[in-house]
Image (cartoon, rainbow, N blue to C red; front, side, top):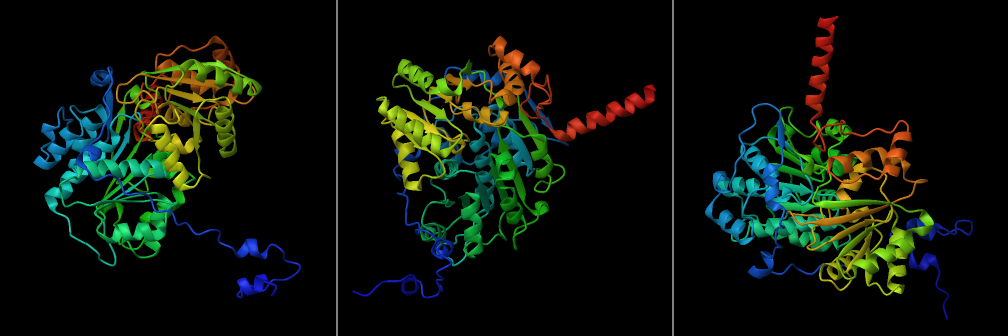
Length: 502
């Protein structure tokens, strides 16, 4: 029998005895063939939604601060937005009865053509806040039919950091654009590239994408950028940090992408640290508006937060004890690493607690299956890394457990935002190990205090003894993030005032 060698399989590679790793170096790995199932197209499934909670009306009392020059006045009802009949019908069918604070202020700002940075708690209606005015403009101005063109030219590009979140935004866009000629498309990694291209080729007015897949498709010249009028960055703080920042800078400098003066750029997140606001200046017009929605932009007071002092070696037993006490209630358990996510999920299954996991190393098919099993209660416990911390909107998540606390307080806020959404009540339990978590004690005390939660005395002691730990949110401010332009102006005025006094 003929001996098969690497040179016969890969004739373009010369294999040397002294280079045994050449196969690994040149192999690109298995080709991705996964094609996600199409979303249901019956009207009932498209407009499926879950009920707002008993605390939804409390949103009316939340303070909102708008900074920047000449902001348009807020609206109080959907009727005041003067949307077309089709949009109003879709809004009603989706179960949207009243505006949330971020919608009251963001919709008129976007309708007025202004750039926007908006900071509001997850679950407070940010997606509708940017989709509705964009769709209103597109329907008023008309969109170009582009069915099966070789290169599609969308009017709107929406970018988000995770596959699960961008698919969720796409489903909302599909809901609000129902019955119109506007065609939203979603593309993300972990799926067959050819499938993404085929979806785009059928026509694309609103492109929802993760950064990697977006830049890949632009590189293949299947997307033209000349007609982009709206660029939306959801979870914008994550989109502009070291993870995705370079790709976003490449996007705005791509050939054909309109300059920031000729497009409308919108950024939404639950947290906007100062350094991210500085980076955002490259994307936004100088006269952009900043909307900060009260403490609901931090850790929501609808989430009951409990911090338990648990050592690393006692965490597993404590987790089992808690999960057994809450029985089948839907629970998300956050851990720091991918390996630990699988390990804890396996461990809980051995303890007869039906559990699944989601993280970046799982194939897209597995990630979607895990979310489906969790969403429909087959596995009421989902162990996740931070890939599931942002934007994920799943009905009836009653509990979030931080098995491992995150490295930053902003990530903590995003994680516990998976529960207590749309006025519903939720519970978040966090395991605090005094050896590994002291770095987060000080900002954690502030988040708990601002959300009117009990602060354990032992945590206050650790926070007090912690040295040199900063927090992006100025102490005493009720907003999760503040406009750095305003802070800088106030500081300059203080200096001028002090100079006059001296």
